[in-house]
Length: 237
Image 1: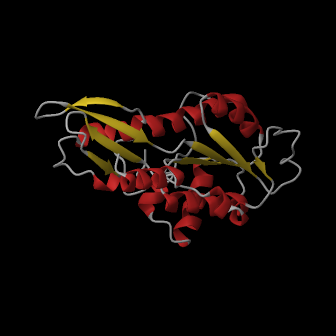
Image 2 (image 1 turned 60 degrees about the horizontal axis):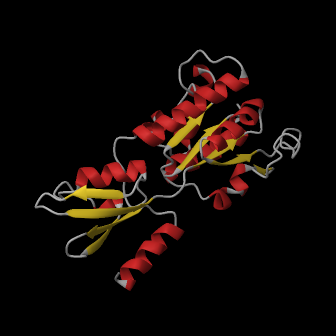
């Protein structure tokens, strides 16, 4: 393997950037593909885009004969929950079972306690103070669950700016309407705001915190697995 190619592949992996190493079985020729490299003229375009969504490596047939092996590297998906509320208490273990790394952020120390979130997923800080630490990216989902604009608005805007694959917010349509006014004043575009999942979660008639957690997780998984196309260098999955 070309060492420079290997170094670029490893750099992409360590930097949470998606990439695919294409190796032609017959010739041994290799190329490294980022989402922004894929054009419709590439005979493997559809396969490459599908692999970026699934994260699965494997053999593919080439149009001119022969095979290529696609070594796929995509960052592990993760979830950031704004609000150490009852919904988060139910959602954290379910999301972990589904394979997500989860972080809960809430500055309210009455809610953000190790007793309520005992497995080290908690940041008892204002979201604005830990945005660098959260490192939101296209393989991150963010759900704002506090109803408090002082806590929710900054991370919502940051998640939209970072291209998080899912952004959701708890609250009624009236609450969301007021949220729209505030975030548009904060320079969020109407199109970006309209991508927020609100009222949050799948429409399953959820009522209890645990049921709402199921509804939220369902929409996060749908956004991860059914997203139509990757986007840009950071490529939404």
